[in-house]
Image 1: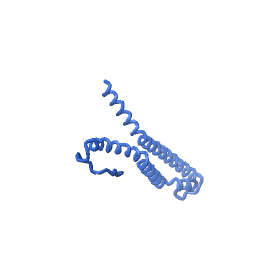
Image 2: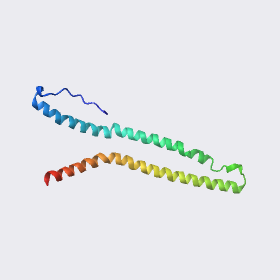
Image 3: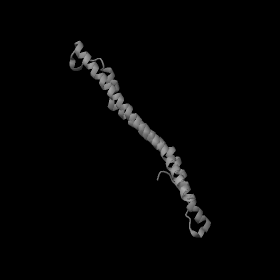
Image 4: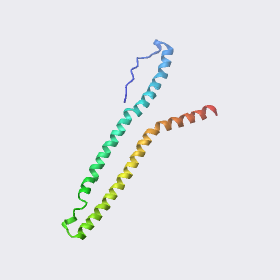
Length: 136
């Protein structure tokens, strides 16, 4: 479990109202605790995952190597045509990789925003459904 609730053993011997209130208190503590975990420790875990994914992407793309090799001729062909072709090909690859990183970043940003909005949206929809059910 992602957090612990310290509750004492409740039985009918300890009193009927204590028994009834324990069934109200424990779900309330669970819900409130879950909300604090979701926007606290859970959000930290999501952002840590995103940071690790970004580092792995940077290791996979190798932008620094592509930028360093931008004006180095490919295949050792040192005339102006070889340099021009290698420059053009490396620029195309840098543009392709940049667009790929932008798409990746937008996708992950949407995932993080969905993580933040999901509880609010689901609770508001539940309250709307409950109000229709109660007042219709």
